[in-house]
Structure formats: C-alpha cells, structure tokens
Amino acid sequence: MDKAAARKLMKAVLAGIPVADLESRSALAAARLLASQWWREADVVLAFLAMPGEPDPRAVVSAAHAEGKTAAAPLIVDGALSFRVIAGDTKRLARDTWGIPQPDPSWPAWVPGPGPANVLVVTPGLAFDAKMHRLGRGRGYYDRFLARLRAVPGIRCTAVAFCLDEQVVDHLPHDARDQGVDAIVTDRRTIG
Image 1 (cartoon, rainbow, N blue to C red):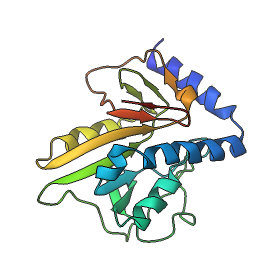
Image 2 (cartoon, helix red, strand yellow):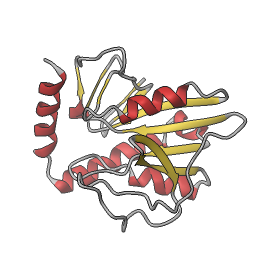
Image 3 (cartoon, rainbow, N blue to C red):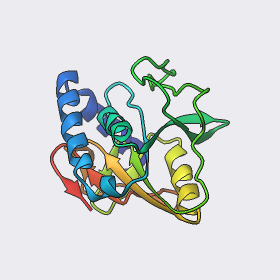
Image 4 (cartoon, rainbow, N blue to C red):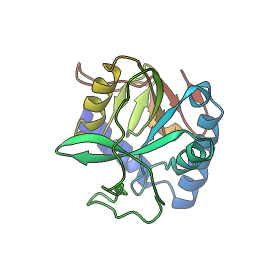
C-alpha cells in the first residue's frame, strides 16, 4: 500500500469513530502519556491542537501548565512549523481552513534555549507502526521540524505519537525524509 492509499484508509477509520468516543479515548491516551517517564522527564511539552476527528491532547496541555512545564502549540509560519508558548485559553482559538486551532500570533515563539532541555513532542499523525514510522497528512511539517529539533545541541527530543489504537498498523510506507517517533501512546497501550 502506498502513502496515498494508507492516508485514505486511515481517514475513513477515524471518520467512523463517534465524537463522544473520540473524546473519552483521547482522555485515556492522555492519562497514559501523563503516567510515562517521558512526561516526568520533560521540561518542555510541544503539543498539537487537534483538528476535528483527531485524538485531542488538550488534557496534556492543561497538565503541563498545572505542573509548571513550558507548553507550546504549533503554528505554520512562512511554510515551516514553529511553536508558540501557550499564553491563554486554547478553547477559543480561531481555526484554520482544516479546522486546526491556531495559536495567537502574539504568544511568544518557543525557541530552544541555551543549555540542556528535555523536550516532549506530542506528535500527531494518521498512522504509526511498531517500527516507529509515522504517516502524516503529506505536507512534511513535522518531518522537517523534528529533523531540525533533533539537530539542536543540548536538546533531548522525545517524539511520542498520540493516537488511537486503530491508528497503529503492521507496516507503513516510508522514505528517507520521514522522521519517526520514539514511542507511541494510544488509548489502550504504550509502545516504546
């Protein structure tokens, strides 16, 4: 199966999950992530804001604030993924054409600072496999961002997929440009 076919199949799987189930199962995945070593070690949490029909890690963002961790959300700036430190309510954000909540552009940009930091990247995707390959939506934003972040001296980047169990498949097509994840957390299990 090629990437286009895999994306189409996974979009259909996600579309068949009722909103109430998606919400409750997102909460289960969040609880699993919050109990992990990656969470305990993180100084910074870079978490996506969910589009409709996607598992929602909003509880992870709330927990980051409650525990005094830096929390930031993605924003596309000049064709590249950047992150803004969350400095307000994420429930009332404007949405882009795909329905993704957009961080307020006035929020400060998160930039890897001097000195060591443990950065947890709560990573979206349509599908993942047990070899930690990730299938995104095809625009390459997270692949390019993860490659850049992993190259920053002093940054310990841990990319953890946040998904439903149905999104973990046996095998995904991938190529040299694709950045994998370090672990996968679903509503039912943790891999990695």
